[in-house]
Image (cartoon, rainbow, N blue to C red; front, side, top):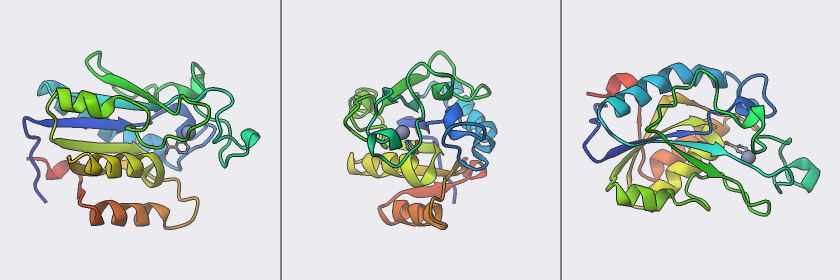
Length: 193
Ligand code: VGL
Ligand code: ZN
């Protein structure tokens, strides 16, 4: 599948944070493996002058998704902690825009669009095609992709730059099928012309 990075494209890198990588509080198995290929995508977009957004899970210490608050997840990505920082090898150029989500203690926000002004920023920059990769395929990447489709964007899922948690075996594969069913395109970096 050949795909072009059109003049109206943008890249979203979802939640490549220490807590979602091995050694972190809520590790995605092999999560750090996405960093190298994501860096290639980031460089391509920056070199072309196209927008790059880095989302981060950025929770208050009493976020409702934490087990301590009756949620399902261990404490993770608490604002200003080491676990909430981007993976140290992730290329984060100054031109990249950081989008913080999950900041409201009472609201879950898997998608980079929920409770942020990402949709507005994309409209302002007249983005029509969104490339999405990161962590985790079956949670925040999926939610971000589905919201982007609802926003009317063409969405390209970066399968070689995303990894899932698979709380239940097969979750990531089912997430991919759902994204494709809703209209996303799935590529690897070699598909880019
Ligand atoms: C995520 C679980 C909880 C994610 C965030 O980024 O996929 N998963 N919070
Ligand atoms: Zn979270």
